[in-house]
Length: 236
Image (cartoon, rainbow, N blue to C red; front, side):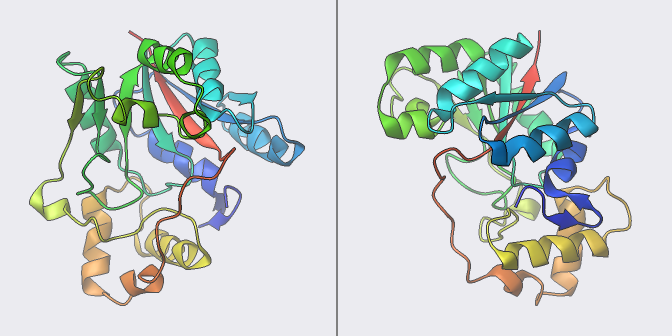
């Protein structure tokens, strides 16, 4: 799905383009696996000037930690690589909230109010390193930030809620199924400029409600072991 065509470009490239619209990111890195099947992901990332870190298929947590060490990151903004409709304004809002300094994790996913596929998490690299040292649970090693949410006594977690005009937790905007790809392709075709926000794409969906029905029957998939994660690094 990371190489699927979206308006003439692979999914991964579309994700990177969206991230580059952020005001708050200093760098981007793609954390993928050492599997030969993922050679293409490193090639795609490099083709648009983004480094790729390659690590364990099973230990995704350590892979992301090592990717961020390689980037000398202080603060990590984590997003999934299958979200080519992510909103840089939501990302920037999460970073700005984190930089206020009164929490350890900022997320939009603890209580879903934004559309699915726009999730953002922000946390310190040191916190992720601490989590990696603290747990050997295979589930924690597979799902990068799960340890934070299962140890709320150790981490201050702040959830960002969507304003009323963007509150569409029922809307699927991530890429898991062929129906998701069809919807995402239609959205890109309906918007003349690539510099769009969630508010912009909600308008064509409102005018053509049948579009949202394309993937309405699809259900959220649990993360799979070894799945590719695109991680953004923020230094400072």
